Image (cartoon, rainbow, N blue to C red; front, side, top):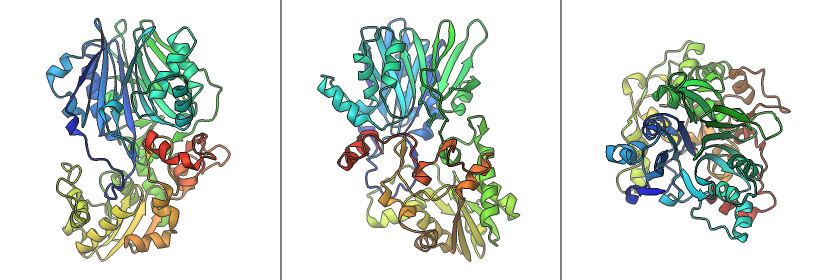
Length: 500
């Protein structure tokens, strides 16, 4: 395989210990194309649509007549794949791509996916979204067997498990590997004979199937979200089912289900925050769901006010729903600057304090003298919420009431979402009244857990069969935390390996 790399000095600063980045982040997005002209270009477009799922690095592996080609780099998709000369070096009618969000783990070119390996059966590229919760245990076993790891990411465990498998076919080797891992994952993989998509048995992480072209010359797409199908003109076919392996080759699409059926536990936070508003997730439009969440929030925690203001951008649909239900005007009282990334000057204490104003500005005319309801998707450490409330007060707001379109986040996620350790989560240490005092709001309310489930069309949360993964709100971890249970000393290594 020909390996091309971009400027390694484009790497963003590590987020470890960065109190200014007070938000959740999805770990990554995946995309794959089979039997389409300019497959790598389509993959770059798909990754661009999935940019919100990872901004640290991106990579594409293509498959053409002369074999596999790869290009990867640190930075945004447009910076890495915006050069026509780069795309010309990725020929072929099949490709897989990956957007990476590295959290506390190492941001280095060796960790950028898709990962590629030459096996006895030929080349194999894999892109992975999620976390393996027994990655440390498996890695140690594999190292003792002589496997040499080239990265510090848990995704490489899949490569080595496939390599040492005694099964004959690629599919059987992959199934053998999947049955040894614990965790939440979706995969897209490419080898000489097929494009493969996989979701974990509980379906925690998303993956959808789409089709391109006309009958008789059909192309296929796998992606983390439907918004990535839209950008390449692919027709949505269906969600890949929990525990399903989709094999796409010259004969079409084959479904393989090697796991026993179990109730799914799709990540509920996809509806609250992670998925793009124009995506359809598990058959439900995200935008409409977020408006319903806002309506439910208004029913549960209404307060007299003059204006409902979203914290952009993620709070907008919920704030619209809240305003409609409450009968209070909706206004853009906070304006987001879309052209600011990380603070671009020396991060002194003063600049850290002002950093929120680089990303958000108060629209004074909509706030001055008003009783304001601020709607946001979550509170993590509380640092950003405190600065937003302070900014709105400085703009002349008479009262500031914060409403949150998710329940209090009391537990860390180990299934592919960047959350701080539990002791750094504001809701893990304080009740709602104390949190309101800390962020400086006149009142604070979160949607209830049952209310969130009602907004998703349920009667409430069924503790015996929730239907969603909500461990960040409940501590109900549906997948064993193998590397943590009874081994507290492994926690730092697991967090670094999985990027949590």
